[in-house]
Image 1: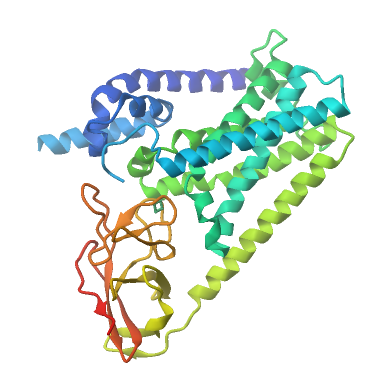
Image 2: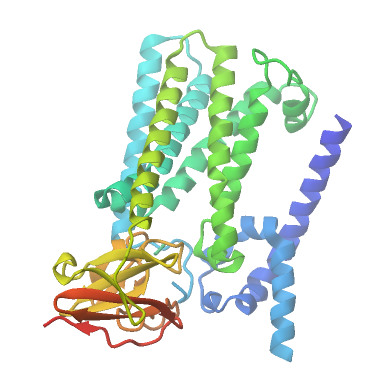
Length: 72
Length: 344
Ligand code: FES
């Protein structure tokens, strides 16, 4: 029981962190990592939110890398 | 392709497809609920909802898994493939409704959190007759969830086609979990073997379809090309390639599509940049090679998607000698223009 509870709390925290990350990512990050997102609709940005909540560490990494490449 | 993303890439065909999915689901639910109420007047609303959505999700899953091999066996099924992802998302939605209501019905009435209750209320993992089959359903649902949330092209592009494809291959694991979930659940709740027979028949059909499609492809891959001249391989007579269509050849571990367009032959890599669709099974539309799976397009002479799109595939040299087609399997860089071979 304790084990399952701990796992559930970790999953919930992870997804919550993803939801927080999704806000700046929707506004800016998505256009930095993918030029196809330039001029894309809000419908598109909203539809990818569940995926962003799951894959946020990967997207964060991609965003940081893309920003670094732009600066250099 | 890579112009600006839309939330849902609808066009006329996809709208028709989605309407058909909606009608199919509606008719199925109506029939299922009516028949159940005729057989069992006491059926409650929750039971009807849980069972109708679960059986519909299982039916849609079978259709989804059958579309791939059916298309490889017969091109007439290709329209079904065109919008399969919407079918997938629909299937996930019904599976989610089934899962949520089951969780509510069986686990929400105690003081324990329903998900914790799902994992802890039955721990008979060693017993076949009392196995906690609901957990299997939850794991399958998680896989369907991951597939549904990554079904937009944005994910295909950003996770990379290889990772995306691997993730979506987990549908087979999810299918096995679903079969076990149904079988073990039925053992515990049903006396009537009809569900077991149906899922068994479904599984056998899928296995046979996949075996048939696999053997057809193996035959194509094992075709031997004995005649070689200066790097070119003799592949077939010109007459075998229809106008605006292609033939696919498997040479040196590469699949190459030789297309006939405006009285010329052009060769490009057979693998679509979108999800690896077989370009040689498509046709020329508006002067472009059009992928049969979701309609990505490429120009025959350079393998590039027409602007503003940016996809590119490799091109190859092809020539015609005495009505025979000769193909050089050495690829040119993606998007390289080739002159093609004129049909005299
Ligand atoms: S695989 Fe989707 S368009 Fe080719």
